[in-house]
Amino acid sequence: MANFPSLEPMTRALVLGDYPQQIYRGASGGEVRFKQGSDRVSQSLSLGYEYLSESEAQQILDHYETQQGSLIAFDLPSIIWSGYTTPPVSSSDYQWRYRSTFQISNAGPLSYNIMVELETVPI
Image (cartoon, rainbow, N blue to C red; front, top):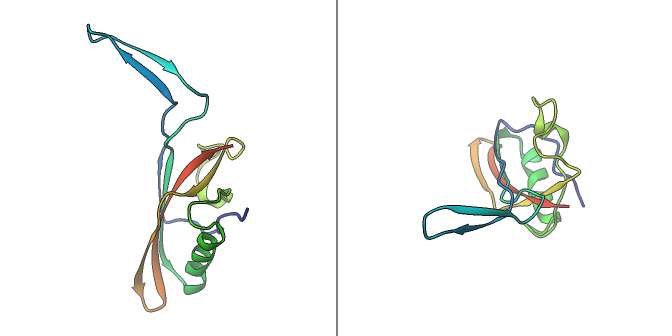
């Protein structure tokens, strides 16, 4: 398991997800919810990188290949959560994997922008 590259993102968007639950709705419109697990599901993290050098962009590409796309889960380095005193998603409870392929665009000569979408995997 290779850690995600230690590159600080320019933008970061986190969706915390919710706990798995079964919802039963009655004929009167009332509902009852039953919690189905103790780990949140559907958590996602979008990381935006701007003006990366070719070698920095290659680190992300190499990591994606090493993890075989979304197949193998991995840990995130602390720099991803810079600005937080305590990371909002515990690394002892969750790992991450690629949610989908990512976008790479040119920001200029030998300069790249990358948008990475990740999702949690309960440990």
